[in-house]
Image 1 (tube, rainbow, N blue to C red):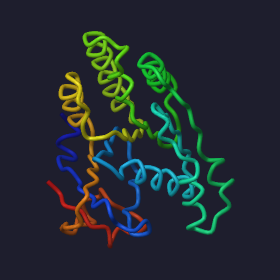
Image 2 (cartoon, one colour):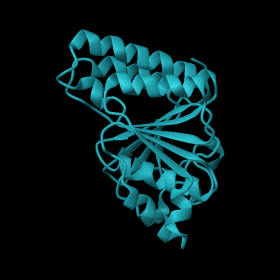
Image 3 (cartoon, rainbow, N blue to C red):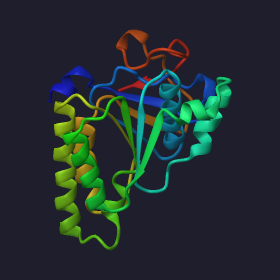
Length: 217
């Protein structure tokens, strides 16, 4: 795939970095990127959403599993001595709680590409719900991935923020497809040993770029 040729690497971020030394979000994203890990990745996504909003970017959040935390955004505003209302006015939040609602939200993104950057929090969880039959879920996940490819084709900036594993039979197939179409992939890890990621890679930019540490595969 073209995106794999452009960004063939996975960026590893240690989970226990202080908030101020976290890497700045890539503000020039024009496709789908994946933020994942066992823990800490939702916190990183909130940090990035807050910082992008403070930079004047429109930020849209699609919350599929009650992962949005308005207090984390307020804390981010406080760190930069900014009125939280100013930050929050640049952020829109939509909650979607069934696979069909999720697909409809993605269809709407295709029909009306949003300005700014969208964060999709826990988009896969609802597809693995016990009320969703195995074959039905596989079919819907395949539709979801096809829609993500269309979003990439249209140049829409989208962060998929999702845990690295689910104990569900449909997970290995869908995560393989998502990892193939996502670039870069930001993997939050629990350990702190890492090499310096060269700033010239273009995956980390802006504030804290020089001090952000990551291992690239």
